[in-house]
Image 1 (cartoon, rainbow, N blue to C red):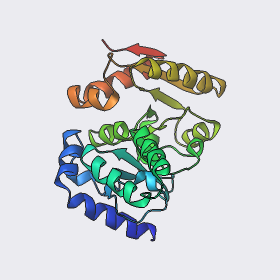
Image 2: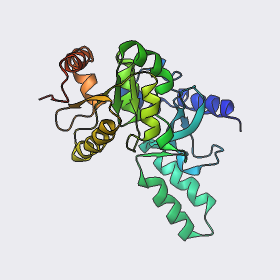
Image 3: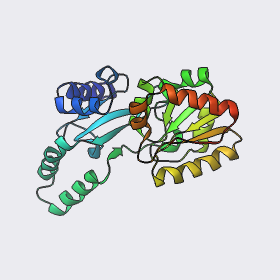
Length: 249
């Protein structure tokens, strides 16, 4: 099945799944954004070469030129039982294979098709003009972080999605700006990740400011609760003053 056909199928699936629509809107993603970010649903019985994204809410990962790279799928509880039933149908003669596939499918909140994560930044295709205009980029961890910050006015946002900033990532960013705002998750994993990113940014002599959010608030949650005007003013002030770290309490 061609990529455009998959977009249409998954988008139609989403439009026909009120539970999925309700879930996305409850996360702060308005329906008018579904098409912009190529959101959809890959049903358990849909044709797909990479079965681990089946039974999930899906989105398209694109390169900086707006070309599709891979699909990523997020666990969605209402599709859990239908998906496990579909796996059972596929492997009913081999319980061991069935158990292995179920465990793999359940393993990650997000699962994506294999692609070179170190070569792509999620949402750069949408964000690059705003990055150049504002002369800074906001780097977050997750797909939904990027979507929600972008929808609330901080369109110059990209996501690393489970990896650290690479040489290629920094080269991509350098095309548009030398100023990087790190806004990673506020848990221990996010703090540790920030330290690794900062080391890499320093090695490439680019500017940065690490925004530390209140504990237990991810960027999308913080933006939805407090809005992006405050964040934008804080970022601009931090860049002007040359601050390397700002902790929000």
